[in-house]
Length: 421
Image 1 (tube, rainbow, N blue to C red):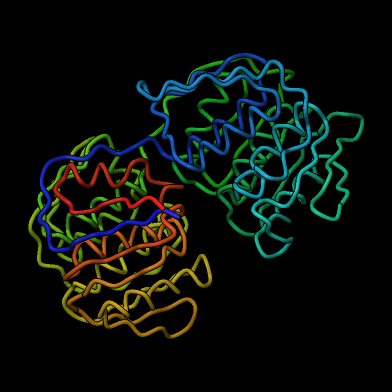
Image 2 (image 1 turned 120 degrees about the vertical axis):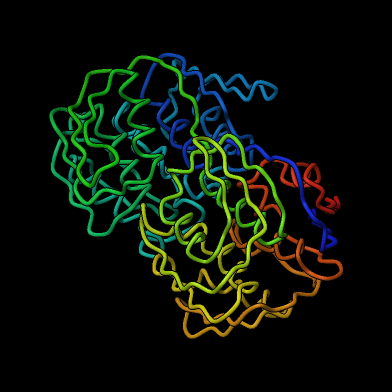
């Protein structure tokens, strides 16, 4: 398995462009199933997760043309006939559940394994299945997954209340409802920027969606969707991670091709902690800053994003004073901090949701393992500010969400090398 070897202490300079948002591109790929005409996707991020989603489309029968130089993907779904998702590909991609709704809506039937090998209840797959059932689908559980069958071959519009805010649930049921008969109203919806972006694309294709980006979304079902084009929005999580990187390395770097408004509470919290930032319409410049400890609680958008919790936690190890980071969304997402502690960070875990951090702490290079996507990129940042050499294994997790990250960081002056196994 490939690994990164990082020598810390290098000052960064220059600019880095933010890629298209993984969490937007994945939803558009799934949404192409709803149409029988071509869709052109621009500013496309070619990473492990989106590559796996493309493989799912191809396995269903779609034709996909890829132009990496122009960051473009063209999907022609006209020949999609298969309604059973490939179990090997489904196990690779947790968000493969996104394809269930569009396939069910267009063809009246879908069969799939549990995404990413998860089980009912461990991840909220039951929220999706409950929504499908309310729209008239019959759920039959199999040994490895489930089969969904629409009564009379067509779903019906209905009212759905999400018992907890769910981004993927909101997006999946919004996509499912566009071809259902009648009106669907979704309540207690997530409001992340990727949701109105998806609705904008679907409306271009002929859908009738109102309220995306608010807690209530109304969808009037239509008979069919035509093709369209979509420009993937900038990845707000990547943008926030790069801002944290500039502050951690005491470097003046320019983060380009981003939308600062999409970062929600993240930038105001950083400024409260002493970050010196120049914020433009589509860029952010980090400047020399003296950071002080500020506690945070992660929250649904526009609150402090859980996906930016790990780089912020690292940033607080370099800030003056004591802070508490409270992860309210995912239990266990702070477990990566034991690796920061092994590097010299003064972090105490109170419970699976809270850590207390005393800073600043000098970090030292260690051999680390990337536990997941967001903690993985934080390990990279930690290696960049640590004294000595840091080796990070399991970088597949990092490649899932960050395109050519080693080459892009090298262009800024970072000493990072990819070692192929």
